[in-house]
Structures are given as structure tokens and as C-alpha cells.
Length: 104
Image (cartoon, rainbow, N blue to C red; front, top):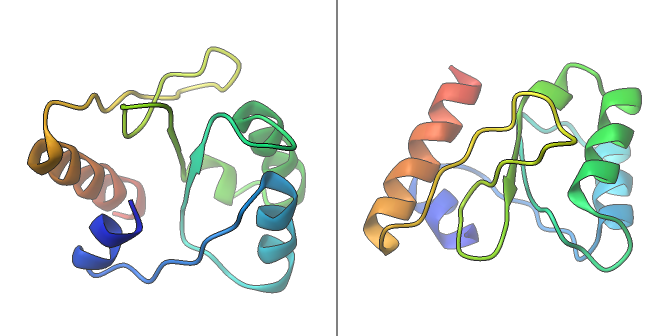
């Protein structure tokens, strides 16, 4: 995922968990977030709810990754949109297109 985003010209920071992601968000500015739905300490919905409270404008620019899907639909997160995997090249194309749409 990191390689895909960097190949698209995006600067990428990584976090091992939702708690670490929240710490990063409190110390630096981010234009968008790509996160797993499943993480060791909190799920993607819990992370999104925290982002909504702490960084409301950023909550509209969050993409979630789940298993083999680049971005998965999450019923507990309003307006979540899927980008399904159909091969690595298509995954990369769709992820980069979704990022461009979010940041457009």
C-alpha cells in the first residue's frame, strides 16, 4: 500500500495501530488517511469516530483497507465506498484515483 501511494506521488507516514495513528494526527498535518479496518487495538470504525471528534474536517478524507480490498465498505462509517481488488495494477489505479478524488 505504501509503495502504491508513494509511486503516485504521495508522502506517506505509517502507524502500527490506531492509537499510534491518533498520536501522529495530534502532532502532524495530514491531507488524507488510508487505514485498515482491523487493527490490534481498535477497529477502523473506532478510529474514524475518534478522528471525527478530534479532526472533523479530516474525517471526510479517510479510506479503509480490508483484506484484499483497497477500500472497504463499513456500515458503521457513513459514506464509506468500496474499491475492490481485481489485480495489483487495478488496485493501484483505483486507490490512486480514490485519493485524487478525496483530495481534489
